[in-house]
Image (cartoon, rainbow, N blue to C red):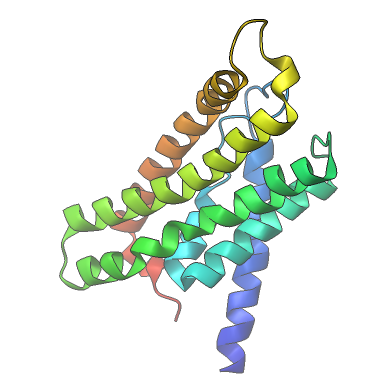
Length: 186
């Protein structure tokens, strides 16, 4: 039991750090923050390997690392929302973990891909929703004159979140279907 817990904590630390590093590997950064990255991928991996606790804890660590190493902070509540809460919720991707495990046991790759994509999209959309709400509450002043703040936040955040969600879903599907042993925790 002690060994399994140690393995869990080591994987949280390593994949949380990897998520942080992947967040820094980007071509461009939006003016008020956000970019297209694979930063959600390690969180999704932990969610499917260890369940909801692994995903949530890895997401929390990733968001915390981003926050304390130079996150864009306009207000303390915005910092907590955009970093710790948003990344933590990516771990909810584990919601389709049982479906994924059953599909893997039956050797049904199509069903595995569906479970991975749906879980990844759910986790990514939860992060997107937090950024969307944060955009309305904290970044409304950047909306062009006459444009509703909610529309500005929706378009701004969708411009990088939707591609990131799709990219992570595709890479996670390829990763787990080509190497299903990654889903086993030993």
